[in-house]
Length: 166
Image (tube, rainbow, N blue to C red; front, side, top):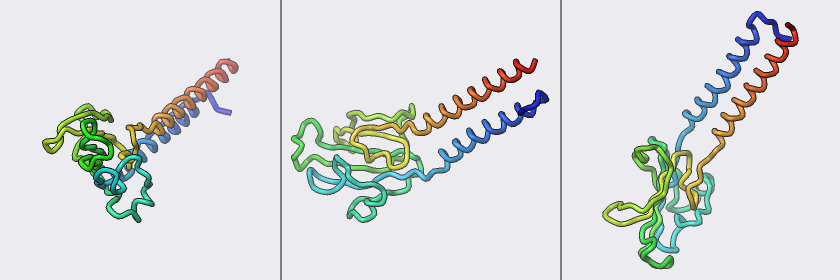
């Protein structure tokens, strides 16, 4: 099937490079959006559980999917912990943030925001701030792993064919 003159090496390198570069280009080229909304207590549509996808949010008053240049989305819950869940002072806000954590890791933690103690979550990805909890999408990791495994299996088959020819 393949000759020992290196044509397989060139083909293999080209296919691997094409798959990896396409994956990186797709990942970096996607428009990142974040949900933007604010709800107080049990009123409004911004609270958890968040029941909308991108299409449904277009028809919901006060909820929108906005472009986010940084790619980092946030969710802030005010009044969590010290207030009852049905208290009017509890509020949920979803937004695009200018920049994520310095270590670029998705996370949730208690912090001070606008002079108030809040529970804040950061996530990077398209519309990632819809989740109740921080959910990291492993789609690209799986695709990368699949590409590497596919390449290794192909390489092993090629080497076994070469060893049989000699």
